[in-house]
Length: 93
Figure 1 (cartoon, rainbow, N blue to C red):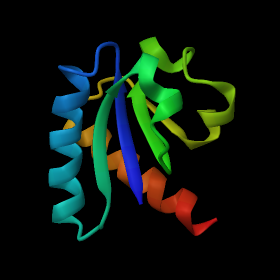
Figure 2: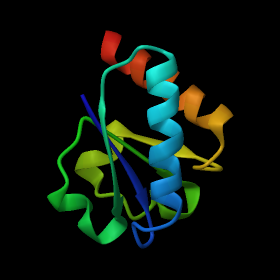
Figure 3: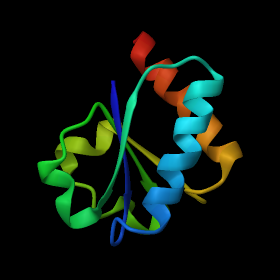
């Protein structure tokens, strides 16, 4: 499984989100590749799931929105854990 964290420039917020997500995945024994990108690169970054903020949610291409999880605070470990739970639920469908 591949998960991509998306922010405005792909350097700050998405990198912190990637780090938090990798820790949570490890703690929960979930295997996934995690990457961090800027919103402009999203079409060239195929993934199973995307994680982004409310501010950027409207910029996610329509064909990717059903695989996008929108967080209020992309660096919040609590919200990231909820995102992992949501991904697990989507995978079961």
